[in-house]
Length: 289
Ligand SMILES: Nc1nc(=O)c2c([nH]1)NC[C@@H]1CN(c3ccc(C(=O)N[C@@H](CCC(=O)O)C(=O)O)cc3)CN21
Ligand SMILES: CC(C)C(=O)C(=O)O
Ligand SMILES: [Mg+2]
Image (cartoon, rainbow, N blue to C red; front, side, top):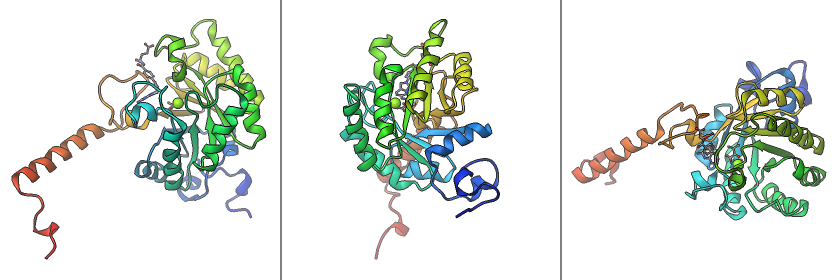
């Protein structure tokens, strides 16, 4: 059932440069991630937590979205990543998968839902795949989670790893700090290789020196997804509210703002409030006879 050109459905990634990107309607699958790496195609990724936003990203050609445990901060208003639960994240995952038709949707396993054992990781991941309709899960950690990754992969669940600054371990890491400087860069590479051997399909590298990310990217076959990890990763991810300027105040150095949604929404809100107070909304065109 070949669809396009020379590649056919098995080898032609649904996204990519040129015509394939504009025309394909197929859902991205995990094997496409490695294909994009092999072709040298760098891809964009964003977090998403709800329907309208996920649909905009899907239509804009974002091939992979993450329903991050960063919903803890950016949806639920907790101070850190730690409090958010599977119960809180599941409906967000479900909304994002329901709202999209092309992007691959990754569910982030929250703190406490997988660390205890491969069995615990499997139980949480099955919920995200089954109830959330996610296409892959992500967990934080390196070689110590190789058995967890193996158990998930054996169950048919694609797994993304996450190394460098891992927010669920902020108390162990001593805050929001760059990881892998100096000799510890080797540890990150060793962890990435352990995850790959265990069957991970990609790995997030968060706040590591660009040189370390470049080296890891060269030495693993799975794609690396950078956030504060320099330009040589196979993909780049940002939290969408950071990218779009909905979150204001002091931002991490790795963020680039592409819009000012906070200001736009604040202006709209003030004008609505003004109109209501002045009696100029609703007008006749908003009323029924
Ligand atoms: N909105 C949002 N964006 C994120 O990138 C994000 C979340 N939330 N929540 C979960 C984690 C936490 N992350 C963070 C949080 C803070 C810094 C930060 O303050 N970075 C500073 C200090 C770095 C340093 O001192 O070395 C920076 O300037 O980058 C970085 C990543 C990344 N994740
Ligand atoms: C920043 C990304 C990689 C993440 O883990 C999250 O949003 O939770
Ligand atoms: Mg996360």
